[in-house]
Length: 75
Image 1 (cartoon, rainbow, N blue to C red):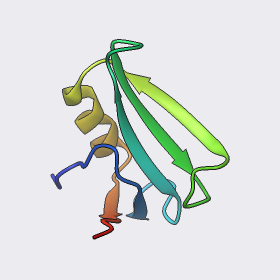
Image 2: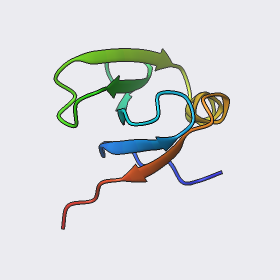
Image 3: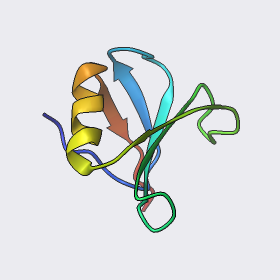
Image 4: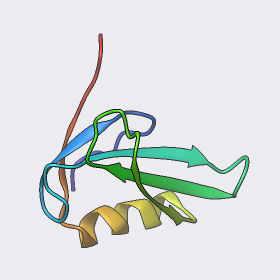
C-alpha cells in the first residue's frame, strides 16, 4: 500500500473517484478520529467528507476505494 500523507491535498489518479482530490485531516482533538475529504476541486471548495476512528481505518478506506493518489507537495 502506498504511503498516505496527512494534511496534504492529493489527486486520485486510479480507483473510485479517479480525477477527484483528497485530503486526510487528523481531527482527533475535536472528533476523536480522522476526516477524509474528497472533492472535484483542488481547493476542496465543494465535496464530501467521511469520518473514521483510526489510522488503520484510514488505510482500509483507501484500500477499499482502490485509490492511487498523487500527493501534491509544495516546496
